[in-house]
Each structure stands twice: as structure tokens, then as C-alpha cells.
Image (cartoon, rainbow, N blue to C red; front, side, top):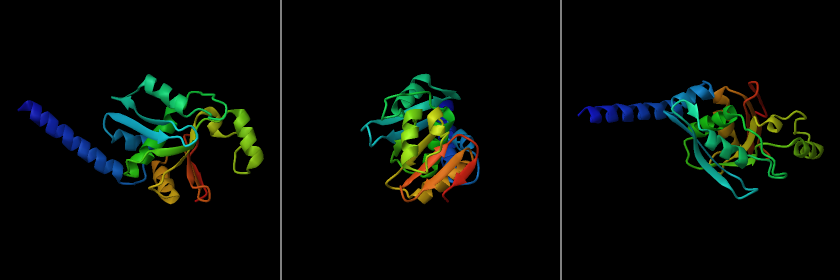
Length: 186
């Protein structure tokens, strides 16, 4: 009997957390993820490498080192093969935004970590690449989805109120980072 009561309460808590997390109100990403229960999950694939990742990276208040290592490798600079430690806060923002979008579709990651060499090459080709890009320090990702518009993704990331959010409508992606709170392209 006690076991059923605990399970029922747990299920009600999960339902309440899902309802809260699905409502796009202005709160920070960490608040949305606190309402997500005892785990955080990220789902992405790379059109560049053909790889995908679907991992729980945080459980019971702690990041899982092995999962973060997998994320670091997945989000490496695909041009050079270099990987660094991705800031878990950047992953938190992407995960919180994804949760608000209410879809099972993984993100398509266009860019995670960028080596200084890759960033310089991209900067020489486009005025939209920052000289001191947060991609170079593992604090940013450029993401896209087929089932959600750039505007929907942009609004979800902005609702996290936890970092930089850039909307690139012509290129069909949203930049999310864990740097200072700011927006552009919107």
C-alpha cells in the first residue's frame, strides 16, 4: 500500500513537472530543468558526421561524467576532429529549450565546438562569425529542427533567459550559448 502511494505521488510529480516545463514562461533554463524531475537528457544528430547522441547526462542533482565525455566527442569540431570540454550549462540550455518545444525529434547540430583555425576560416567567409566566438570555448551550439520553425526554437531558447540566443532565419538555425544573456536576429 505504501509503495503504491509513493509511486502515485511520484507519477503526479512527473506529470506536474511535465506540465510546468511545457509552458513557455519566462524563467531560466535551470528552473525548467529543475521541473524536469531527476534527470536531464539531450538528443542530437550531426548531418556532417552521420553520428547521433541520445543520452541522459544529469541524474539526481549530478552531471554524469561519462555522458558529458560522450557529448564532448559528439560536439567536436568535425573539420579538425578536435574536442574540448563542452560547458554543461550550454547543454542545459539546449535541453531545456528542447523540452519546451514538446517534440521527440532530436536537434540537428550544425556546429558545437569550433577550433580557432575553423573559426578563422568561417570568419573569412562570413561576416556573421564572431572573432571571439563562444563556440571556441565549448559554450555554444548552432541547432536546427525539421518539425519546428526557427522562430519557435528562438522563442523557446529566449524563454530560458540563460544565455545568448541568435536567430538565423535565412540559414534555418538557432544559436544557443551559455554566455551573457542577449539576443540577436529576432
